[in-house]
Image 1 (cartoon, rainbow, N blue to C red):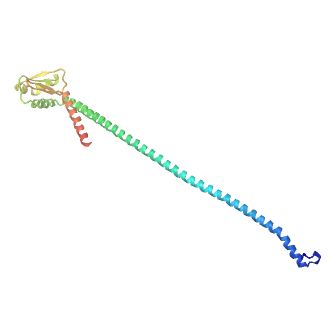
Image 2: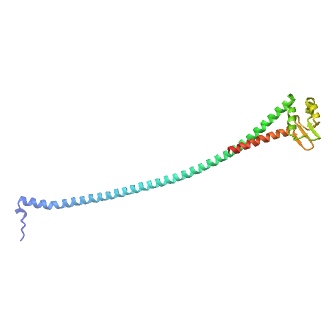
Length: 226
């Protein structure tokens, strides 16, 4: 037998209680569904955020790695270029030093040649205006002989021959010297010929020896300082 009372016999409290119980179930289901929907949306958002964060982290890591590798590659390339540049500079330095030494040698030889040419010109001028200079040349040439063996001859430029005869011709002839002229000789020198000796004191030979002595002295100085 059913214990349910007809609606007309139910009290107001019984009707409200049952109505409240029956009406609450659909609302609760709807709220639970909404909560479920919100929860799923939040989960999806969290997953999306996680993917984005993972992507961003991976991108940053890859970028940092690539930047580091790029820096290392760039540094290695710059180092290689620096080494090559230093090598080129050393080669340039060596070439410049070699060229400078050659130029120094050429300049040194040119200066010596210029100096001897100037001295030669001054000496010629001296012979023309200081006639006693030829006397010193003759005396020095005779002093180089260990002994005078006949026949003994002294050759001069024609102009110097006349001068020598005036200055010391008698003394030379008294010592057994014959004074001769040579039209091919330059003023400012002489040539001595004896039976056993030949003394070349001509102007050209004396200056050639002087130039050679200067060059040899310069070469010795270069070798000592190098």
